[in-house]
Image (cartoon, rainbow, N blue to C red; front, side):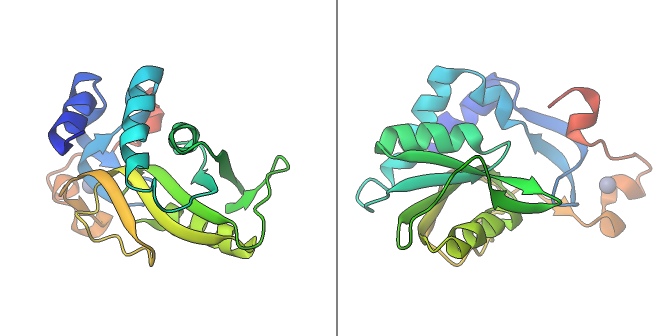
Length: 191
Ligand SMILES: [Zn+2]
């Protein structure tokens, strides 16, 4: 699947939003990717994640993990394509952790995935969850890399699309300077 095809799916499903958004990273941006609108179509989710899994099919992956909630379906569908377990990490008191009886065996080869990577913060936290459990993080993957290729995760990383979308710290956001107020994508029923 080409970058253009993936982006086309995001556009057609209304998942590529334009406005003034407060991202979960704390940065402001004119664009927001609402992957849930793509992933609500199970057949599309399966196809996209199969394309992502293709990059890792020769990496002897034994389990896939993502941070909840956004990454859960990506983990599930990528794991389906690789024929391995799908896990997710959840926040407890702000810290990502394994719950629900999920375990990672020492040395187990794990792929960390996400829907969209912006700064890579959640992905890095998920990598730490795997390491703390004794697992080996083989690589990371996301449907969309909107860091413009600048997310330095410390492990090999692949995405289906790389976007160069400007994101600004609040104090230097031109949209704020122009007088508009950022919207948290979840706050208007978008999520
Ligand atoms: Zn702003």
